[in-house]
Length: 430
Picture (cartoon, rainbow, N blue to C red):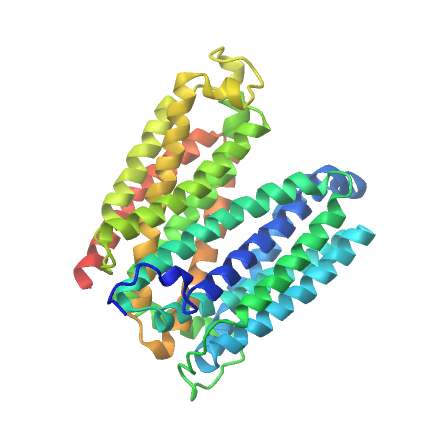
């Protein structure tokens, strides 16, 4: 076999894992979006609680397991055979999807929240395995491309799950369709998971530390003591924070600055997801399999410049401007030249994020010992979650003090410059 096999995508070394993680991300977002739509249009009125409060509670309970159980997940991924764990985790997903179907049938919001938390816990245990097993399955020259495909597929799956979940859930018979769809996806994902090759135990003699707080502290301390892992984790977590803040501001900007309807919100969400995927693949193409962080600093500069340009081009609040008619649909929106430029900028920002994040994951995998690789990826998940949670709280606080959504994006864009030094130091240490 050639040193660089362009067809590794269709080999058993990669395809089963690729399909399994794609369907898992699809299912998580399909169920989560269905629950969010039900909360917004049905349950909030019944329980007299604000939809944003319930929605943020649901999302928070999905993310919480990443804080609490990532350290344990990383230990298990390093100690045990990863392919066996994938099967058990996917069987767990089937059970959760069946329980979710029951929750939809009886229209029980508490049960839906329990299932959503269970999916967060399941994703917590799958993440370190997914990233930890890739270097065992791939040649070193393929690792960057494999990460690019995984990241691209993940964001496409997030987009598809979000769009389809939102479209189906309130339609006639939509809950039944969503239920059957998510159970089928879990079953197919389990079958593909059974085909992932065995790679052997990475650290069979590892003693599992059950205390989740002590193990989390120990894991973070270990990862933080290494210059390469610390800098890569910080930069990766920053990109996740940036993406979270951008996506959260899109509905307000579309409605109150661009006078668009829900089609434009979907358009921008699609641009962001597909842009990250395109940036991931572009990064792989430019670096030609070389594991390096040399594109991270230019990527952050592009993010800063594109965000500042977006801020300058965005019109003022809808109540103060008559640039465009209210309630523009997709065709009318894109017929306005400046809106096409804004759309391109959204894609460019997302591509910049993809260019930054993919090589950093590959660096972490390549420069971490096999015996502790999954624990390092688990530490990354913990810090990612912390960055996203804190970033969301800070953005909400800024808006509460009167800062506009475009200004929040501007602050986030300029903040990219703070991390240029981090990734340059990372590149020097490689």
